[in-house]
Image (cartoon, rainbow over all chains, first blue to last red; front, side):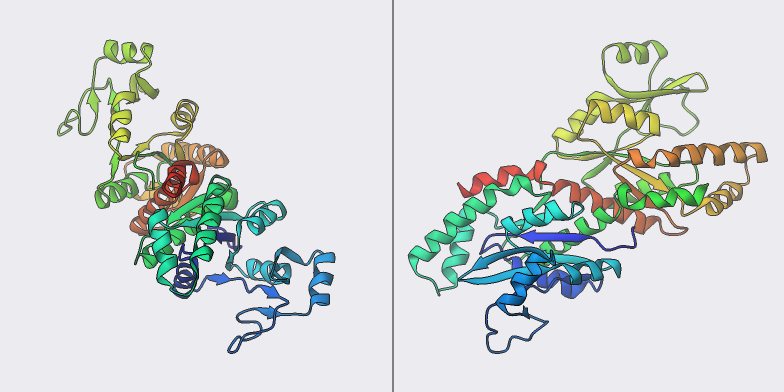
Length: 202
Length: 202
């Protein structure tokens, strides 16, 4: 196993259960950390700066983009959301594996900048289950759900650009997190990270 | 996960503990099978045809090579040793993951013929441990041990040609087998094997 941490990107459409699975993964393995995003939106009640997000100003965010300090970013409802590069690099150097929970566009941005990044797409088992999950939230209008389903199809169509895909069956978040952990362990065992052992025989 | 089995090659120098680790892996996972080699050498007392080896004649072996029925082979002490292609293909089609426990040359032959084959190099933790393991067998002369050590170095130098490498620490065969199992599960989750899930959303 390499001593340096590795960077993993977990993407998945709304209804894939991404949040639950990533929480399970991070909570059960001390060596794995979830990257905290930076955003320009206002904190919601209960949100803590540096825990849920790094809350920064628009000027600060744009400066960081200009200085190459943002690994990937997107805009949503007129606010920036992005991954601060420095924190990621520091954690990797300390030997932590970092999870970025980001969307497909961001994932492709990261892949270009950090070639070693490993991409994992989380998927619901099928379209019917996805629809049921979205409807069971009971908070969204029919046209929003239809829009989310269409968007999910578009996102899943990009799955071949990802290294791995993991199906999240109903009630199987733990198993799903464990499979992602298997992937993390396997990636550490790749010879590109372990070549230095050869020196121990010369 | 793909339904078809995948092919894994485990190599490792004498003293890497390869036999113990592979036995542990196969014994603890029903979905994983060890490929039985064919050989032209005479069975030793207790060896069962079809279990330890497929014992076949020299003519038969050479015919099979000619007909492309041998996936890889080598010669040792004037006898052929090789992997019968048909058995491997049948087991893969049944959804079994197949382990070939073969040497570096054979591994490279297989990689050329079956591009999906995944290669894993098992290594001792360092040169000193390797030497101690070889000496502790107490059956070999000093010059044989020295020859094995040199050979191990040559084999380990080819590690970068392998996809993965796994260190087998003393007394850790179980953990080692488990890491190989992690690799097997991760390989099944690669998008090249899982793309068909996209159809479930269209």
